[in-house]
Length: 186
Ligand code: HEM
Ligand code: HEM
Image (cartoon, protein in one colour):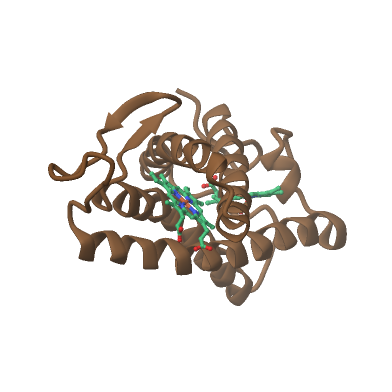
């Protein structure tokens, strides 16, 4: 098993960062789009990719615990390190809490979940009116919806700051932060 070194990141870190990162950006864009445009056709895609990302995010947390966090590529003040660390924590925790709260909204709301057509959680149909779905736990489903909504916007802010930080390192500081995440040695 290859681990991260100061000079070069392991293939595991690169794979998990870029698959999770790109899916998350797609999830944020599709989430805002489907809610604002009432685009119901997007929901099944959003839920399917969201379910898959939960497992990738869990694998990433396990990898961070085994491998540790990367050491900084440049020489910065404690404040700059602190801000980057907080943003990394917000990013990694929200990649877990977003799919969990999304699942709470849908599954506990009685809507069920199919992953690319494969049923994982069944819809909860009403016995009196089989056309209608009933919530399994209305309060927890609402709580999930509130967390999903607000954390979604916190995550958008964190991703914007994170990408701006990566570009600042590359363009202004000219250090190896971005190059290392692109698989190059520094
Ligand atoms: C990392 C994964 C996910 C991200 C980043 C994400 C992001 C978002 C965002 C930004 C919104 C729009 C929020 C709003 O404006 O109210 C949204 C809505 C929604 N998401 Fe997700 N989502 C994820 C996973 C999931 C999963 C796994 C499910 C369900 C299984 C799900 C179900 C929903 C539903 C039902 C809505 C619409 C809520 C409403 O109508 O207010 N999401 N998502
Ligand atoms: C185009 C978009 C992105 C770019 C250019 C980018 C760039 C980078 C770079 C250069 C690092 C290394 C920082 C260091 O060495 O300290 C990093 C780390 C990290 N990034 Fe991103 N990133 C992007 C998107 C995302 C997204 C959407 C997430 C949200 C899940 C994310 C989460 C993280 C986390 C948690 C780390 C810490 C190291 C790790 O766990 O792999 N990134 N990113």
